Amino acid sequence: MRRTVREIGWAVRGACRASDPELFFPLAQSADQEARAKAVCAGCPVLADCRAYAVRAAEPEGIWGGLTVQERRSLRFPSGWRQPATG
Image (cartoon, rainbow, N blue to C red):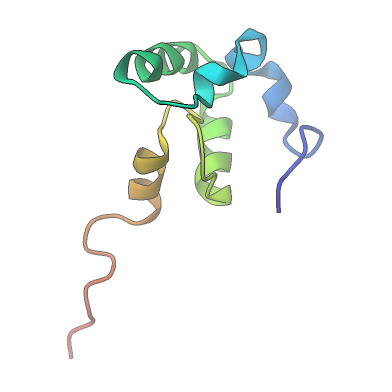
């Protein structure tokens, strides 16, 4: 289920609010674009809220809280999480 800005009120205080959304949701991601988006996030007053939301909601696209989809995924599923239980 997608959340609205009303449901994630911290978003209106985000440093990205004045940026072009394509910076955070590019059609073709590049290292330069990723670095520019992360630079905006680095000075954001709601970075922790944004990151927590994106990880919890499993946002499938874009840079949220200074993290790419792959970086958020690694927080949700750390290395070795699927190893079988011993016993």
